Length: 207
View 1 (cartoon, helix red, strand yellow):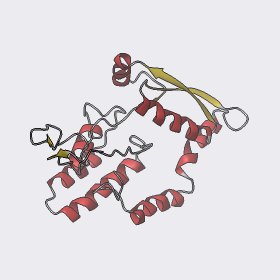
View 2 (cartoon, rainbow, N blue to C red):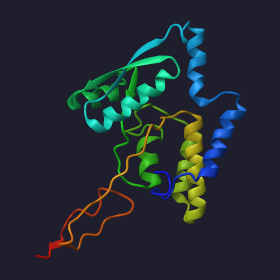
View 3 (cartoon, one colour):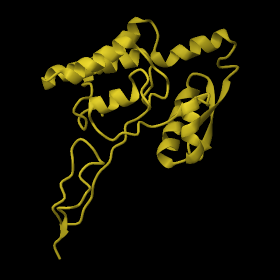
């Protein structure tokens, strides 16, 4: 998660460094695919049509609609293809799609959970098949770093590397809130996950 909600996310000045890196390359990142498409005869006068596949639930469809709107800016017309849940994950694992939009299923604001589950070589939820040994070594380094500030900077280095490699572009980050009635007592909400703290063994109603 990016700050202020996320503890590990890049601050604005580090994000600006990443933007300047793309600028030094002479092209905006969102324009790079258009260059390749133009060589194949696609552009403003001949747009490329693709299906954008995703799981047929709201959280996935919303992200896919955002992706489709962004693809239009580089002359790609996406058509939403909603897929039943029972069929979606087998298709993702087979990479049976042209453009696929899925979510990162974990709900922890913790680099180890995100990096090892989603980005290291051979991870079960590394759906894009991204594999870079240098990135894996950086992920191991941040995991072993005991100093929180040093680890945070290593996490930013990993994120920078993942962005440079276009490993799995992030479309959005979801935000959640917990609402409760004043008579609910004993519930402690967690700061690093929306899934933790729901066993309810210490919760009671003051009526």
